[in-house]
Image (cartoon, rainbow, N blue to C red; front, side, top):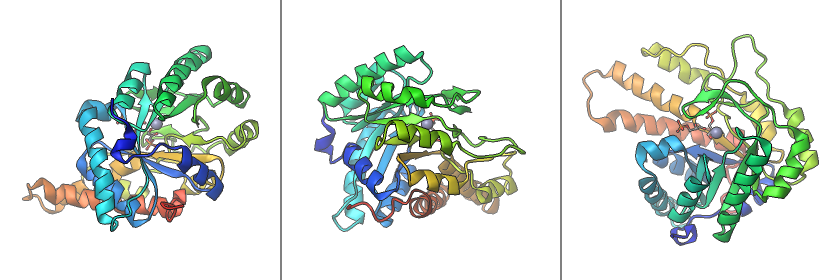
Length: 324
Ligand code: G3H
Ligand code: 13P
Ligand code: ZN
């Protein structure tokens, strides 16, 4: 059993309190490898933003959860090194934890926050599984995110064909009975790069969010599936041999609006994938003789860093809040 505190990580309690008061959201960026981690940390140090490093089930399978935990531990030191010693608050979070056992193994390994995603379960079972995770996590000072409602979209293991919006009348009961620290809700965001079809009205249901806020005032809300699918990156991918057709995301203006409310954590992964893919495709087309991975992963890392810096400043509003 390793305590996240001994690794220099923090849980999300204080960060969410400050985000709520300051009307911004903490960025939650997924990582699977060194280049993504470096880009996230560089972007957040340079914009002086706190950050939530997310490890998904797919990431655990791809990179190994022990290795990812050591990388996050290294990121604490790396952030200090590149910020002249100050560092930034870093949360290591399990994204879409499928069950109690997975959450427990991450907590025991030194994660400071976990999500138990019981959104696909019947309501009472979701409560039971979530409560079980909360009871264990809170013994170790680890924060827990639960979920109510089902997001549409397809992303590896995170699948749902249609939205089931969160029912505002359930949130108070869920939060009270489970003891969760934050709640992910479904209001029209979805995973992946194909969130809307051409001709759709790509709006999220800020009215449902407002209704939820009324029922649980001051309680931290989380938005998954919050990539905006930047069209300039999609164009670069397609101009360099890619085939992304009708990839449409959430407008950044709507996310900025949501970040001013009780939404304290915004999850972004797909936009980063697009930025890296665009940069790599460009190198492959423009320099076909290149075969040193650093020559294409380097530009991918730079592009990811610039994207996340811009998100922190313009969308989440977290820039400048590392030392609130
Ligand atoms: O919510 C899903 C995240 O984008 C992680 O996806 O399981 O493919 O790593 P993944
Ligand atoms: P996107 O696919 O919109 O980036 O969502 C990521 C996410 O919700 C991770 O949990
Ligand atoms: Zn998600």
